[in-house]
Image 1 (tube, rainbow, N blue to C red):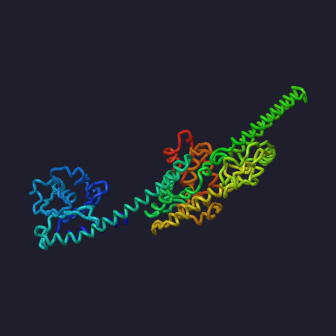
Image 2 (image 1 turned 30 degrees about the vertical axis):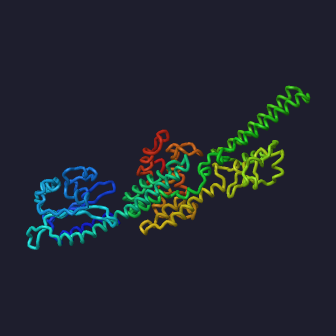
Image 3 (image 1 turned 90 degrees about the vertical axis):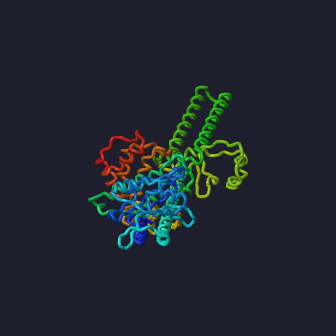
Amino acid sequence: MEETDYLTNIEKIIDLAGEYCGAECGFFYTATDDKFLNLEYSYNKKLNQKKYGSDNNTYIQSIFLPESKSKKQKSAIEISVLNNEIVNLNAIYSKQEMDNTFFANYDALNNYNSLSLLSFPLINHKGYVIGGIQFTNPQDSSGKGITFTKDMVDDILSICSLASLVLENKKLGDDYVQLMESFIEVLARAIDAKSPYTGAHCQRVPVITRMLATAAVQQTEGPLKDFEMSNDDWYALNIASWLHDCGKVTTPEYVVDKATKLETVNNRIHEIRNRFEILRRDAHIEYLKKRLANTATKEELQAEFVANVEELEKEFDLVARCNTGDVALTDKDIQALDEISKKQFVRYFSRTKGISWAERDSLEDLEKASHPEFENLLQNRKDHIFGQYNRGELYNLKVRSGTINKEEREKINEHIVVTIDMLKALPFPKELSNVVEYAGAHHERIDGKGYPNGLTGDQMSIPAKIMAISDIFEALTANDRPYKEPKKLSQVLSIMQYMKNSGHIDPDLYEVFIKSGVYKEYADQYVSREQIDDINPEDYL
């Protein structure tokens, strides 16, 4: 239930009960979970006055009920709420043992005179006090002041029981909304916590999304001048931005955080380095054998050994460089890797020992793996295939750009499909029906080359396009990703400008992103000082 609907219904009920008893004034209080009593609505027919919410603070501040319990003198509403008691007074100020500060203040501020009072609690179906109501100065049909009779009180309580239902339903709705939002944030934080490197991605994308959506709504000219968002749209976009990567719960950390091509749980470059160490040691042993056999002069053998070592060092340097993924590989690099892979060393110890039964079952030739064998320096073996993953050393080293191979890329892309499936499985109410579309399209491109559905810009909503820009900008400005060094803000905007020109992101929203200064507002708060350099916005339009 929206706040306006709730207050409108409460107002109608209080006014109806007040009209029944001819009360000049009515006051409606709510009791919060944190034990505060707040005056939410008041009316005074004589003064033709109505106040809502915090406007009533001029009469009374929030009452902290635990403190009220220890007071010797309590107000009528405190007695009603704390003791679950009806207070019916013919003369408010005649009760010296009662705290009448509220009515004294109310009368002084309004040049009014509060006389008789009816105060009672609002009870939910479990018997808990959730609020309270007061009426003062009842009158008969001729306008003469009267007192609250027992029959009148019974009827008033009957009418105001509707207020209990409205208040309880609102609280129940608020509790479920809070529960859902808390669950969403917990899930997003869990996804971020899954990786030490993507730390706050799911928490920061909502920030950029909100900033850019606000800037888009504020446009008074250009293609976005008519763009508006309802309260439901804002709420749906907020939830979608928090949940846009929820499918990553199924993506292995080592794939998401893969810093080098040979990395799985650890960087397997160390295994290959050991093989180069073996070849170097073999070269040294061969040199010593030839010295003992006097197959050539000392100088010739030393030159041969040095040449062998230099070749090994050069080849390992190439393998190490190819492993990082910083620079795209050339055909020459690929050919060199193939040649290096053909070099062999002798494995003496069995590859069948100290492994799991599943890994043992994946070995191509148990007999061959059990005995010493010549093996290639860089290998692609059958036991490198794990389900959909290919951990072949040469296969991964030959990835031309970045660190992720084809199968891992498919797994990463799969997270958005999982996200969509997860969100579709949730019974969102009608007003949140756009959550799936907003969250599920942040990897689409306006030229139709994105995933998972290859949507074009015309097929995407503006909030979905906003999400795409937010996701990209957060990822590019992040300084905690192991597979890339932190980028300067100018570099980030250059990349995004290229993405705008190449049909990746929406050009109209990108222009708003730059001209409104959203990029700078976010960077000032969330990007490290070292990454922020001088920017001329016009250079990136």
